[in-house]
Image 1 (cartoon, rainbow, N blue to C red):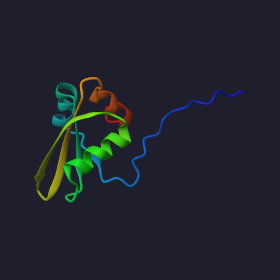
Image 2 (cartoon, rainbow, N blue to C red; image 1 turned 180 degrees about the vertical axis):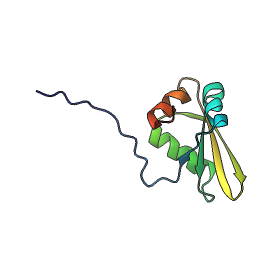
Image 3 (cartoon, helix red, strand yellow; image 1 turned 90 degrees about the vertical axis):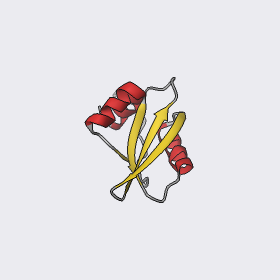
Image 4 (cartoon, rainbow, N blue to C red; image 1 turned 135 degrees about the horizontal axis):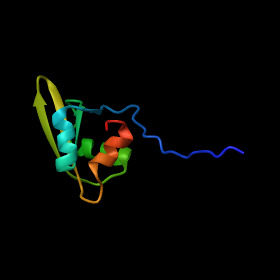
Length: 94
């Protein structure tokens, strides 16, 4: 009999979050426990927070946003008990 591997799929369909993978973003994952996403200009901080908490099942400490070159970036700092590097590994960023 074959053993079935039960892995949890991350439902990323229908969201407007795009993970950012740059040197700075990876450094922030390791140093500050912070994930970086590009998101829709219309999303509020509360909407971003709810979406990330539902998708990744993590608790968020704070959400900061930056609008630059007509793009909106969200910096999401996770609470101490959850490591951002674990979430990034699930996403395939690391």
